[in-house]
Image (cartoon, rainbow, N blue to C red; front, side, top):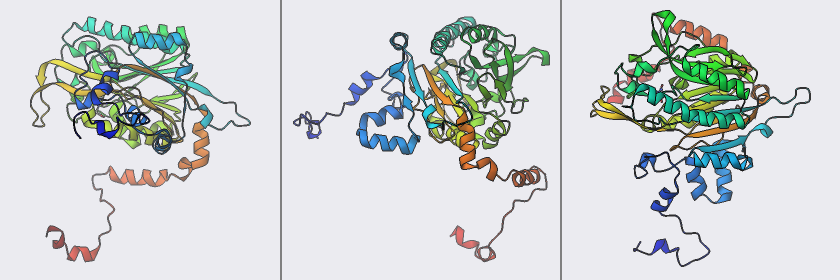
Length: 437
Ligand SMILES: NC(=O)NCCC(=O)O
């Protein structure tokens, strides 16, 4: 097109001129310092892009196919004060309800629970003191926890290792291990216990754990705090990544807590920490233990996993008939010393962009839109936990599953003399050369 031509649309006053790239970027709400000229950080969410470019009728159908039954967007019904505060303090605030998508049963009253998730960036540069970094993050997240509490959240999940930068890319032990603390008695758990009690809220807090009773070992751990301000228990990350810059195995190994489900005042809760979301059997075990809501506190970056993000948790919610609350950190974290990860890439100082996009999936295949890819946020979603059993009754995945058969096959598979069950086409054997030509 010619300069000033505006794709031929400007002469027709009935047609809205598509916004130009610089206008869209200036509308973007971001955390401080986000470079919106970088393609990875140039848009806030897929939902926003779809809403901006699709006509309303088509948008509704696209959303139906992609997101299932629509959930009610109740954000505008939140108290004005909370909406203003979220803007003043610069965090995304979203509120949805999926309650109407569950059946109102005759004999069981609804079990309505408000799930909240918080995603956050680090606040101070990574070369600030450990104490300053920790307190700045904690203060920031505490603001959003107060908002969640005031808005009546019953169960709140925080992102993986929320109290610190995700420094495990560096492979340096110090100062990063200084962020580790005891699960039950550490300062973060003490801090959250007060908030949990104040707001009658269960909190799932994923931290770096220091286990003093076992030779000071370090773990990647989620602590579950009850709504009376009590420590309920903990779960340690089952699957430790060895992919890209995720050099976490330098610090801690696979967890030893199994697949606990925490029976709380607001439902049966489990935690599948980050990389565990790639393992369907890990999700399955939480389901078999009766989970109704599984939190997936994560720290993952766009270049590596963004196409998987909207798929895996949602699939787990469907396959196991529970709700999943997916939480990813947000922002780009730069470290003082360059590092490499044995993949031929030049030494670099950051992981790439943590893309946020936290969201909630339901057992009926629906999901909420996500939080922003570019800034902190609090997402609240009201669900009816009765939906878990209703979907089990309807789809019968647990009834039709062949657990015995899988158990037998797996028992064979883990033996050293395992032989894969393959039936070979003898004709093809005779023609094996064909493939190489
Ligand atoms: N934190 C973590 O386990 N990240 C691994 C990368 C991924 O699973 O996307």
